[in-house]
Image 1 (tube, rainbow, N blue to C red):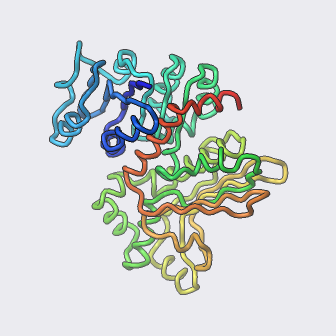
Image 2: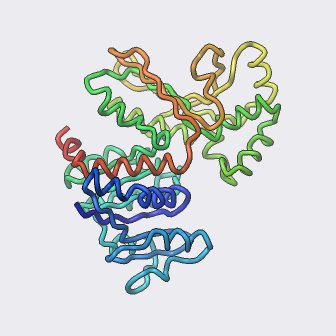
Image 3: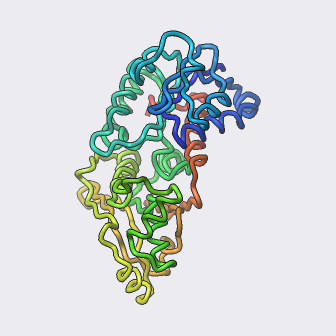
Length: 351
């Protein structure tokens, strides 16, 4: 199978995906019979490149690493913006990893909608379109009989959505409980172990590249809100939106709170919960919780994440992801591409 792909977004995750495609090209060919050719790359900072004959990923990676634009490896008339890029790029699958827009998921939501309408497979790591348009996009992909996959939107490359959708077939998931945001988990860990105030811990996370210059998406709980919405909507049959989730971030947590909890044999974590109510509805919340040290969640430190699935047949299934990186997120996208290669989306259409 020859597969022409394009990358929309070439930041840390997009570049890690490009590296992974290079590393895994022999495995893709020999074990999955897939010859993958990147025919387009679209970036916000470094321009756009299309080449139907295939782009050298090593050349593209080197160009971006040294601050150059991608126009030099582009074939044809110049591409002005991402919309034009998507209209002209001859890809049958598009990887999308643009930054999340917490307001409405745009412009990625429109990009993905348009691609699916044209019968193009989409793999996304972007939480925004999933939080604001999952059911619409899923239905559109089914109508067009194309793949729409999104494993990397939650817990990087850990297959937590696949576990729920395929590993727990026939089980009734009554609750999902998780620590999803690695940035806030690192901040809380450093506050406790280094006796740092919140702002000091945020600054340290920023210096390490774990937090953005504006850390509000993480610190105020929005990233966690989007992730618990995705888990609830995909696995629990609901249609939550951000305004439906009770949200509290860690903005008001002080060092005194951390030390008081520790003295009481507890640890503060930013916990996400989605729970099925007696009437069948789903209640979702994100907020700091004081956990007993005997709680397995209390031992998940640094940038690690954890999720519990509670079901009627497996009372508690726990998955822990340690030390994620852009490569782990990229792996989730690679796995999604392989699900397209395997025709897994045809099962999605028939569900």
